Length: 119
Picture 1: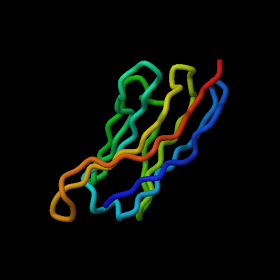
Picture 2: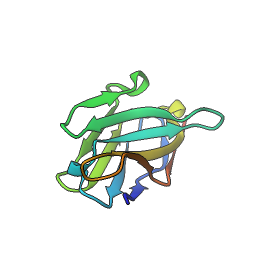
Picture 3: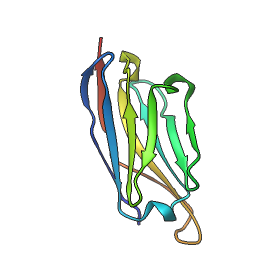
Picture 4: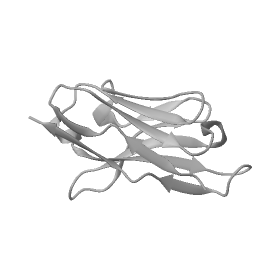
């Protein structure tokens, strides 16, 4: 079982920064990919950024150049968010994609952390 715990959300003014952390209960090296998604009120959950096991990253167009996904050598994934805008306000979720040979193919989600950007 893979468990994810997010932290680091909060209230920030437009133009400010936040760093989200996702603590993973297993070694990240055994997961296919890690990612951050967000869901604003009345909208569908959308991909913000992900990082593959090999290290390649992918970003949503709306946050390119402002957000950076990274990971440490063990079990934590980060999302550095700079130049925040009110439209970045959402609940941010950490996601893990697991698969063979270590795990059954599954998606795992954290409980979410609220990010609110005031104008």
